Length: 254
Ligand code: DC
Image (cartoon, rainbow, N blue to C red):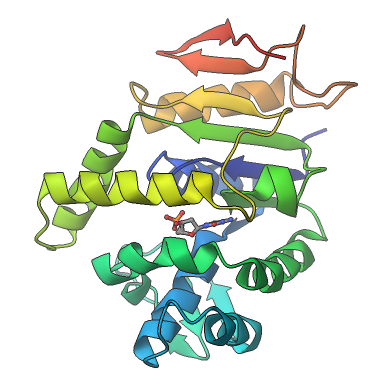
């Protein structure tokens, strides 16, 4: 038996979407990156001239906006096609402008309420890999397997910077690093569903690991049935698990 609902959380550029997508493909599951929804709302607010600091207006937009994610409709390297009220926003939601505004938007409780309700509906049938910041803690607290991917902020900024350059975008590494630090700060300190590790999540530090190594480790967990949640979940003798440089070690803490 394999886990039917898989939650993957972690900070920006920790490898969540790459691993999530590959894992979903190998398992034949639906892949859903919830960050797309927060980005689509942010894009729509900017596009419509709604001030980002106007919480009521942004929340009302999140409640009304029709966000759709479909298999790729164009062969341009995209993982999926994202539509906001029918407009293809797949690349538009990845701009520095959206990056700079998405954290405050995702900190609004009303925005989260609207989007989380949709996310739960999507996962209701199982066979899904859902990726985000609060999937294992809030959206799907009963997920069969919870992964938390992490990496140093410098490594994550490097990944994001390389991605941007590959798309032909001019961006200085220092600027990308500063923006990453800023988002980390807002995402983990906000009052509504801050980013934190679920008690029963498996933590993988991907700083020094390649994609294939992380994927192999994840598949090993699944194959060995180690994902099965028993009393106390994943925590073994009061500790979580963490991969560092390919080896497992027990984290301390209750
Ligand atoms: O993963 P990402 O960079 O595409 O996410 C964009 C923003 O959305 C990020 O600042 C955090 C937020 N987000 C969230 O708060 N909850 C989620 N489940 C997914 C993303």
